[in-house]
Image (tube, rainbow, N blue to C red; front, side, top):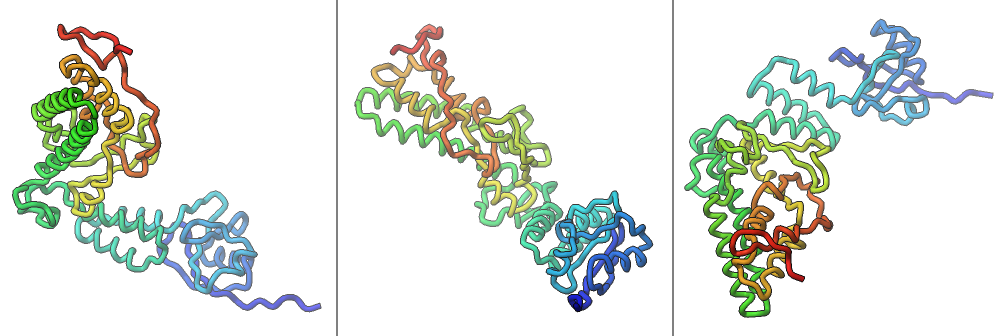
Length: 338
């Protein structure tokens, strides 16, 4: 009985530590291991092959399905391979190149890459390599300001304005809610409360300091270099995915940062605003602890900066504290009336 005839399959093979790859043809994995170990002077015992792209171990059956010229890595018993992109980036960062030279090297890697996942990783790396966060003025980094009104002369002034805009948007939601109150008297008290909240926001300069890297106070959400870190979903103490971004670094990062959210732990639309509107029914706005509502709506006491992936859209099931809602006119707290 004749055995199954197998033609030589051409592949490209490299060692775990070398940059050079060589063409080798073999009928099966065993033959390829013998040739590879002889070529790289590695012990045959315990040696194995994996895909350069993602580290998948190559079995005999899998080997026969590989396209010609697939790139493989030959490993000794105790060696591991996390995937080509990890290796390439590590090699790239160890070259000693800086600035434009490093960016050009990353672009060359990207131009030869076909895998969508690996292209995404290399693209993100390239964006970080090309970031110009140390530059601040429009004159220094005009590309960063593309599409931004000419009145903004520095990155920090625009980022501060961006945060102020988010706070104004939140305030508009409060004002919109007052227009839905049926009772004319209650609606009037809601408007008074809203006007007081606006004054409190103005006094705090709309909390634009949260996004302003030039801010000296403790409320700044970024580093001096402009890096923001996701604070994790409302029900976690930190971001498990370690999301971070520097919108000061490039126009692309600035645009992506617009998808990050200032998320209310106690929800704005489901809890805070409805509780405020309800509290003002048949009561004067001066009886309401507006400082409490201000903190819930506009401060880091109830806000978390989160990457869009960490922004959970479902109900948070957190409620306002009844003890905090009402105050006596002399400043003392009293329980909410049922």
